[in-house]
Image (cartoon, rainbow, N blue to C red; front, top):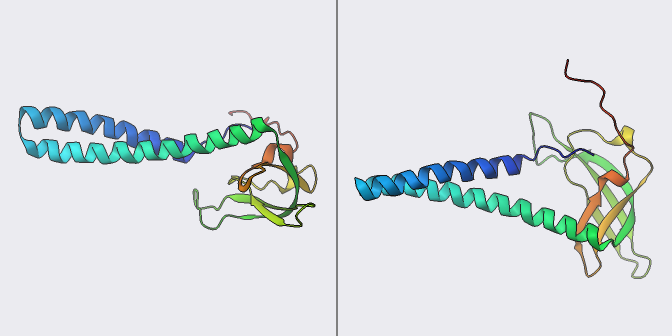
Length: 162
């Protein structure tokens, strides 16, 4: 699957960039002219930089966990139970799709439910079967990554630009 546009990355980079513009302006104008500029521009710049770095750190943490889980290579094969909308998110007036899946641990008889990342399209026609690979931390099943690519057929987009 191609790398999708990540709105969180875009917003985080945008906020950081805006903050990096406002912060030096506030410092320079505040030192050379009036403390009011330092307060206004500096405060706004600081808030934007803080929010931007916070958003970027969330993305880095999520990607690091995903890489750590896939590098470790421990996964379970879960049954796809439902493909549904994520009603709590709206992108361009539409709700993204999510794959929900379940796994029953044969050793503990514990039932685990997993949910994929948001998908901008309905994956139903592209599924290989009714199971999906879920990378998990064996000590903490709350740390998981649903490997969507393992359950989808390869897709080639031949629509072109024109």
